[in-house]
Length: 469
Image 1 (cartoon, helix red, strand yellow):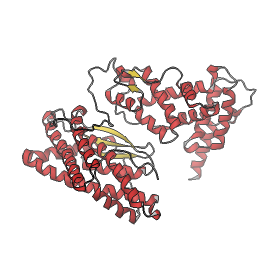
Image 2 (tube, one colour):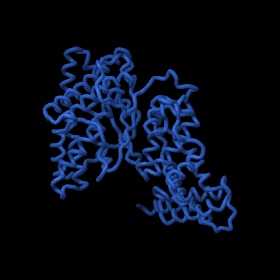
Image 3 (cartoon, one colour):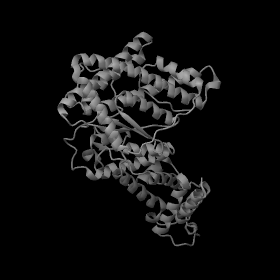
Image 4 (tube, one colour):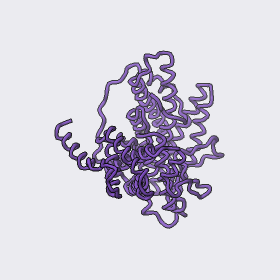
């Protein structure tokens, strides 16, 4: 780091962390002075200004104040206001409930995550999200256990979310303040991002009549009685869900069987269905949209956890490419954004979740009998090679399905698919004009070969991703 950078950071620290904020007990405390202490502690909590000794000083001082002033002047009361305002502000800056929850969970403990969930619930209650939020927003709130859509109710989020959380967690004042400031600090660091779902300020009086969407985590243990082809409105998620249920059922059968040949048969059928459904949707949507080539293109964020987040991002980029979508990875934010037509985004998301389970199991099997291979470099190379081989397999299946579809649709199919590719590329370039590409890196040879071999053997299933180093 250059001297100028050090000077700029030191200057910023002096401006935010004024030594006077660590005044003696005799100081008259006001919301302004306590607010300055909270700002200083937040600056010292995370990021470039992280300073553990200084952070601990602030926590001790704020705890003393917490125990000595009136309730409305306590640091926890001011922190609760700050966090609630910040959550509301982030919604208007492109962040969604699941994005905020992920940003806290990947940085801090599950306890901190539960705190931000309490404030997400409070905002949902204040904005009457159950009756006003679009379906995509409600799906996220339901996955976070903030909303019970069936009962038409908000779970939690009543008065004083910080105080209620602290009682449930059974924390001392210094612990309450420490966690709350960490959450506040992380929320303050989050930048403005693209608005993908209508934020609360733009909601109507009622969400009745708004188009439904299917939650990303929805699943079915059995196929529907019939599989209908996509309609002319194939870009809507409720149509896609019918095909996804059947695909998931095939994948579940592939995982359940102990016979490799049968598993391969189910897997190949699922892959073929994905490609064919996407092609059918493209043809029908083309007829409905006419010359509106980019009609229906959407963006979706996929949250990626550590460890090996970069390699997992490479994985989803491979799957997005095979399915006609594009992907950009935001490592500092912990999510990948995939852009394309809704059918293709859902298939990419489904495959990503499924194949990470396969990679986890295969990696564990590859290192089970050799402790020397249980290294981070092996697992990184394994995951990249696994994704590379899976991408080749899916690409081959896609070409085969496209050839079959061409026999049915004739020469009109290729221009339709080409137009979709151009439309996605143009939308990607417009949404991410300053994207940069990662450089190639050296990989563990043992991990690469093991990952390629595992990619040959893989079936597609659903479950947990790689979660431990």
